[in-house]
Image 1 (cartoon, rainbow, N blue to C red):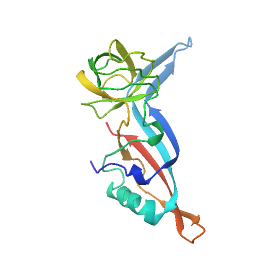
Image 2: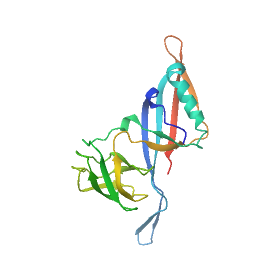
Image 3: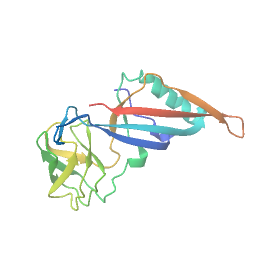
Image 4: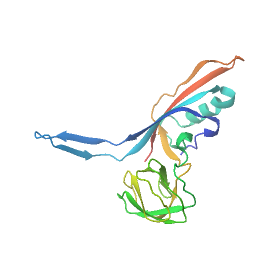
Amino acid sequence: MAGVFPISNSQFQTLGIKSIQKTLISKSASGKKLARQIDGQRWSFTANIITGKRSDVYGELMAFIVKQRSGKENFTIVPPEISNARGTASGTPNGTASAGATSITLGGSGTGTLKAGDYIKFANHYKVYMVVEDQSDISTGTLTIEPPLREAVSSSDISYDNVPFTVYLVNEMQEFGAIGSDKDGNVLYKFELDVEEAL
């Protein structure tokens, strides 16, 4: 692990999130579709970092990216645009379920709601999951998520705000481009970041 992305000094201009899940699909002569998933789901995203000067953004960012040694190292990142849950959740809910489950039994001291599209993470997991159905009371009942759990959870605390994604750089070459200068003649830089979730 090679650190935490320096988000305090780098803001995203654009963010594109992808869900990757390889699926083999074939069709019979009668038109019936047969599908089989052969790989675990993972998140991927592309982010454009807003332009800035080397002195106030890009020195630290360049150093951090070089430290990753292309895709060799994993690091954590909390994309600011999706950092907070859409629901009203507060406190510390926890969940219990077997590996492969998509329905999590809730407990703990959480209150409020979680909404479809919120990202969550369990205390003993690297994997980030998505809530796929609204849950009106996180203190009880069940929470429906995707993808299925990679590992069992047993009264594991659930993070729902500032959920860190453990990722690695997808491209071997990282380019920092100068795109012009400001009114004072300072060179402005722009950087595009392509990462994929490390499982």
